Image (tube, rainbow, N blue to C red):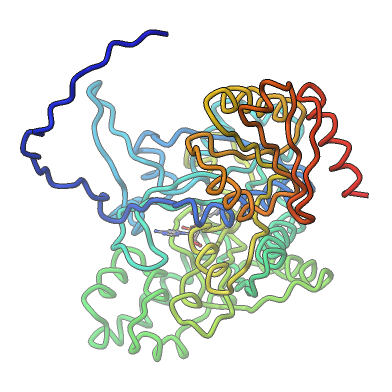
Length: 443
Ligand code: HAM
């Protein structure tokens, strides 16, 4: 194609400087260097959900704010302080989802999944948003992998979900332990709450303002306090196990028996209450066994039974249980443990010399791709030396070289990168020849 040459003025206009646009606070880019580890986590999640018969669900990132107010709880940190909420032009009150469970239950009710054979086993992987104070391991956008089983009340399901999460960490090479507890049914919990309130009320002067507020609004959350005075008082505080109803107690014992059966190591934590209101009976949280305190103190995942959530959202009574894993924190553990992911390799490199060579190589590359042979190239580069350096770095077995001469002769050079030997073949047979060679090396 004929192009008209433009004359380029040598004097460029003075460059205007504009301030660069940064990241929104608490947000971060997941850069290419970390992608092999993200890929590894996604693959492990996929492998486990397939083995345990879960079906994928993707719910919207935006939901009605009422879903989280009702589902997660009005007086939880997530709803009180951390929702990214806004009104749409249409006047709807919406929020970016802070978690996945309420949405999954909404979808289950909305699509009448209770009419399907029960239980319905769903999994998801995607971003969640919490307007929390950003720090290492705590981001305003984080990724969760979660599994939810809806429509089954049996303790074996709780144990199987704990097992799946346990396997996720273990098979990725992370040493993590699950802490378990039962918070009983709402009625027995109410009695326990009263006992807890009277215990801390008589020691009110030792509580911080924040904990006093928690005691008035959501007394169980005082047990989550990191204040050393509360830590000390907790040892004498009433424990929820002593207030459990018989049904919850029996359920909890069975969960533990199933965990014992499969040798899933766990720690009983009588103070574990979890920060979301929808839980009943079993609750659990995973922590890394790491000497690095920032890694060890942030939960790697958590979950529990939420038999009352469906009612809260206007559905029919539906027992349900699930977990979700915080993938950003798992990533931090993988990086700290220097877990190596085998580099994605390509078998061949297509190199070219001169404009005609480049055109031919451009087409030959497509032939390799169609034949399912992983190839790489740097068509933007002209010098053969630079291309060979890249081919070496990529550790390919063969480089296919097409220059001006090869185009005229209708050939291509196959260079064995390890042996340093070269062979000239008919360009129309190059894919076939390379395929044969690769098959031989794989035997
Ligand atoms: P969650 O404990 O609030 O539970 O969150 C699950 C996991 O997400 C946490 O253990 C943590 O690893 C990660 N995570 C939470 N917030 C952040 C953050 N700001 N930055 C980085 N990672 C974070 C739930 O969300 C429930 N929906 C779990 C569940 C599923 N319960 C029943 N089914």
